[in-house]
Image 1 (spheres, rainbow, N blue to C red):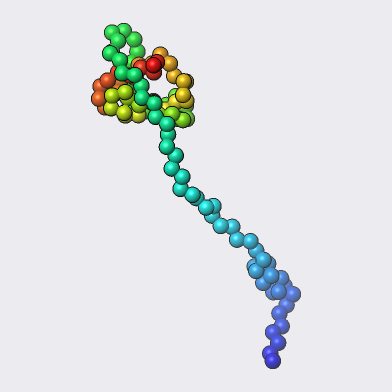
Image 2 (cartoon, one colour; image 1 turned 90 degrees about the vertical axis):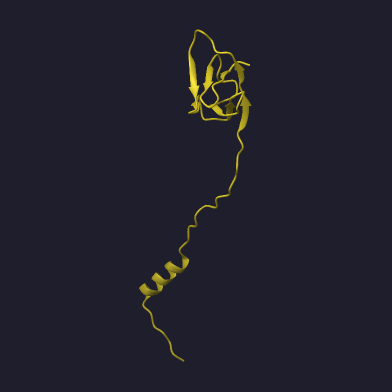
Length: 102
């Protein structure tokens, strides 16, 4: 029988390697969130007043609700529900005017 002799330092290095923890990347679970969509009310254009155009999508906050064109369903605004009032948005996709007031 053959006996291997190792120094205490070599034994310590081997032990520390064997006992070291391994950090694995986090498990990413694919989760598809669907954002709630609220259609805006289509109105006739006003002769006076400010009209915003979208898309590109207007952002009032980190979107929790997508406000869409009342005619073609294009997303026009990301905002919290009830956050935006008194705004007229012209959809650049279909040309309709949408009011944030129901």
